[in-house]
Amino acid sequence: MVLVFPAFLGLVLGYLAGGRIERLALLRFKHIELFFVAFLVQIVAFPFAWLPWTTNATLGTMLWLLSFALVAAGAWLNRHIFGIPVVAAGLASNVVAVGVNGGHMPALPSALAAANEHYVVSNNSARMASPHLSWLVDRWAVPNGLPFGNVYSIGDVIIAVGIVLVVVVAMGTVVPRISSTTLADERQVIGQ
Image (tube, rainbow, N blue to C red):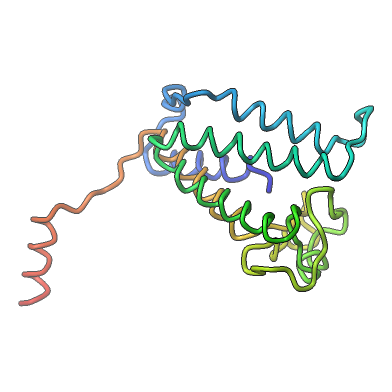
């Protein structure tokens, strides 16, 4: 899933909720290099067509799983940041789907058929009609006709929600809290 879109949505929602974009500069990740290394490992595993190498499918899958481990380590070290545990839950969902289906993320044929015509099954995914734990696999698609066609899983949706939360909260938006006295007051009003 293209993670730029949830980050942009987080910016818009954060702004509308009274947050300030400049507060994002105060967000401090521990060992952010783990995320960059994970990204580089994925490029080595599944190089863009214009890069001068190819990677064996088995090695590509092992590197892909290594990149998951690096992101998981980064998420663990940054679990104090609001929203990161949600991102980690989505990541875990995807890892489970990949693990029980032979090291590839299954994509349902219905999702592939609904995806943008330019989308192709890549090295890290596989077309499967009956995957294990099918509710965790790539089962939805960006509607045909929209740019950046892709298929996505429930894990991808959870990751996107987590990214939105990270951005919105980091922008300093005020999340209303209900105190126990407020709840007691509301119960009295409802009971009368």
